[in-house]
Length: 158
Image (cartoon, rainbow, N blue to C red; front, side, top):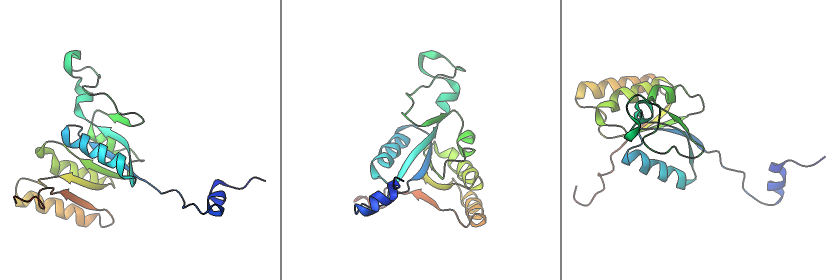
């Protein structure tokens, strides 16, 4: 009987394969693309799905309403036209939210309630009351992680 791949790797002194976190990205503008490239290179996670409203409304010369992506789909990654579709994907474990600021609060809350870990670009919300609402939902979902991309906190000019 042939030995399993795991046993063969152990005998050869190789480390077991890493379990990669399965990630979805909502919003494939500049920051969403940067997050995709970074995740693809770091070896700790794998992007399995993306959502961008450009896929829902069509784009470019294709015209509004047609399901033609404004950006080329990413190879091996499921593409959704609505964030809600991505949040319903059972394979997605964590979500990167890289949308215009007005969507940060509702998408963060929806992702947490869908059982996903969340990394969201700044700002969390536009007022203290909205941030308090996000905090309340985070407390309801204790087993999930929520983090914001305050990428300028270490910038030399700040």
